[in-house]
Length: 190
Image (cartoon, rainbow, N blue to C red; front, side, top):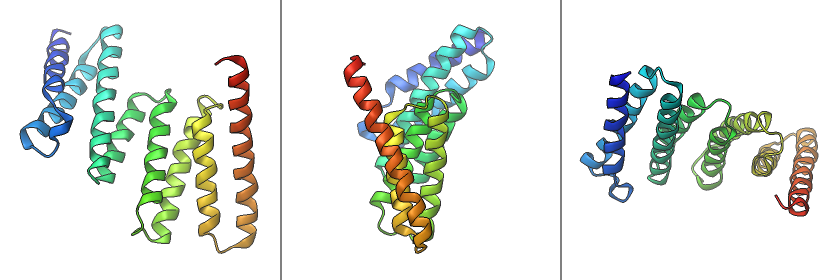
């Protein structure tokens, strides 16, 4: 237990010293790596559930920061790996799966150098992550919207007319469901 607390505070110190605007500087980047390493050790060794939950929350935030920095710097694979860690740490929280799905959407949408096969693979991975999001709270409006977009992307990639004719109505249904949920939230004040 005492060792876990020490690792948590070491991690917090490194995390506080890390400056996202100085990405690419070896010493600075190493601070975030050390923060993650020490948060991970704190999570693995903490026996008190309250402190362990707090360590998981901080570790999750550090991985999210790393994912954002990596993807902004063009290191898509590292960003995706960091977000996968978020989903492992928080399997009951839809936001990690959602963020991963959106990351894959961004890759397909912005990277003109992807082959059709790569686009299809990334769309499938993104859809899988969004499906995981939607199994947790089925009314995650943004996940419905992105899944709708992914299905339309798949339809555009498909040379099979029958497949396109399946995908577009499914995308339309998701869009309609998202719009209905949004309307309901507006009227309920939530």
